[in-house]
Length: 60
Image (cartoon, helix red, strand yellow):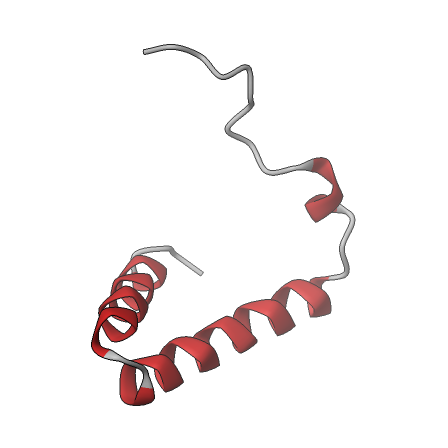
């Protein structure tokens, strides 16, 4: 595998964000996923479903 020179850790600016900003972004993402699973065209529903499954695999 060829290294891209990028680190796998998140950018440092994420560490300086207030927790309320991070929680708010996660909440909005989950709302978008739920809405997309109900109302979006079929390809987007599948994408939203995979995001929901990935999110469910991440411990809180």
